[in-house]
Amino acid sequence: MPGLRDRLTDAGYGLGWSVVCQLPESWAHSAFRLSADLAWRRRGRGVRVLEGNLRRVIGSQAPGGQLRALSKEAMRSYARYWLEAFRLPVMPAGRLAAGVRDTGHSRAALECLAAGRGVVFALPHMGNYDLAAAWIIGQGAGSITTVAERLKPESVYDRFVAFRAGLGVEVLAASGGTGSAFAVLAQRLRAGQLVALVCDRDVTGSGIEVEFFGEQARMMGGPAALAIHTGAALMPVTLWYAGPDWGAHIHPEIPVPDGGDRAEQAALMTQQLAQVFETAIARHPEDWHMLQKVFVADLDPDRLAQRPGQ
Image (cartoon, rainbow, N blue to C red; front, side):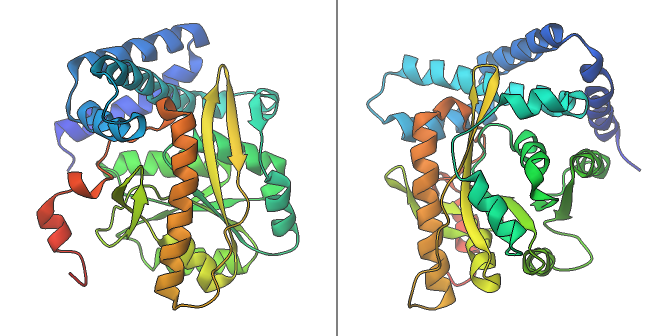
């Protein structure tokens, strides 16, 4: 039976989707902005990790005041993501279609899908990827399949699955499911469908080490591995906030390199993803919602020692 904390957490998310979407937008915006500022002032673990990540973006020589100002904007951006997630089910379709500033290769991605070739979108934790999913589906992408970590309590995970299903997104559990998520993703890609994976943080302990902002970091190798395994097009996607609107850039396909084995090919492709992410994050650092450890220097040495092959 769920404990009191789990029941309160579930009730909080339930209120988000049932109440926040009914509030006047200006009231909800003010409330979420205040919550972000309070969390920033408390400077808990998540904010401290965020600042450690952002320090790599702006450089170690940047004044502390600049870092604190940036982390404040990043927390406000993160709060905006949650506000929009709660309000997205009632957002008018016209507002979504008119508000996304598409600066990239969305047509190329849609043409791949129309021709029956699967596409893998690889994303960092930037902007609002739920909103972007609803937008690209509205552009004719069909459905999307993704993978998500199981949240605690389980009822909160179930709420997110239902929320994303309402947008046209199929969610596979990263662990604890009835089968291999990789196998299902490969099946969807071979059927000419779209898969979207957020991959700028290793959650498995066996990710691929890349150079990122001049340091070593760990990222998920799944997007590259799927492209190699299925022949799908691997296309990085970066997102940001553009005033009241949203920026989206679908980057050109990263091809499978000639030569080398599959592990070597995946490592090269993941490094290219990291380079694309680095450039986008440097342009919009306030919209990188990374409150978890990414860089090898920050990771738990015991966890690193347990990595397969070490």
